[in-house]
Length: 290
Image 1 (tube, one colour):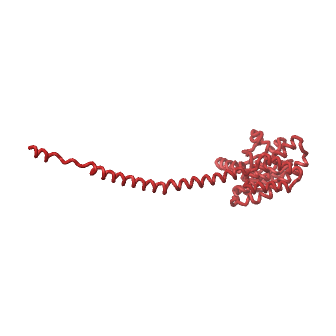
Image 2: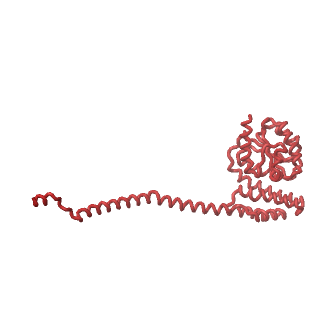
Image 3: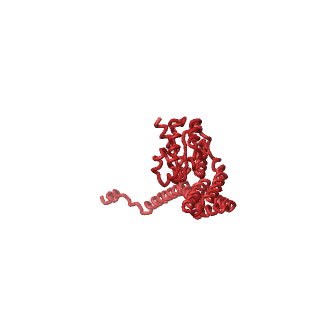
């Protein structure tokens, strides 16, 4: 009986016989995990790190270029050089900005436009006489036309449905704002007609003879308000396009936005770039009215 009982008891398995297979399976599992981890790092993590590094380099380079635009002090310097008719010095200054990475748009909006405003302010404050300011603005206008060719070179094909006449009110002395607007509209693919300061009847005759989607009027001083209102009424009465849109711009409308409705215009903008965007919105609005 004792012998039978002893035979009935299972034989005890040694510890090493159990532990060794387990260690082999664990080692195999670790090896598989390591292989999968290495593959994941090679396939996903490393490329992302490389892209992140490349992105950082691009952003860093862009950050350097982002500071290439004109500075406030340079606006003052350019205005001073224009007042003494230092054309060569002004030209060298502009070229240096292009060389450091400034774009045409930055030069136009952040250098030329504020320089024109500063010259006008100095005249209003009697820091310089009208003749000197006029000469300075004439030189600035020449720079605008010189660099405008390159600025407009990338313009899309002109759309005949996007035809605009850019005018100045009667008795307007300076045409820099009109020229700036014209450059941005041409760059945006508009068919631009420029109308110099002249009698109200002449502008009315033009819109009666030619079809325009929009009219843009640029004015420098508050004393032009009455003349602008008269011009707009004449344009609407004579226009071949009964739904013609009219935009106004210039310091007077930047300082007094309520004057936009006062003169009977549809919209305004603070600069040439915003003017093209506003023009597109205005066309959409006018199209929905029809």
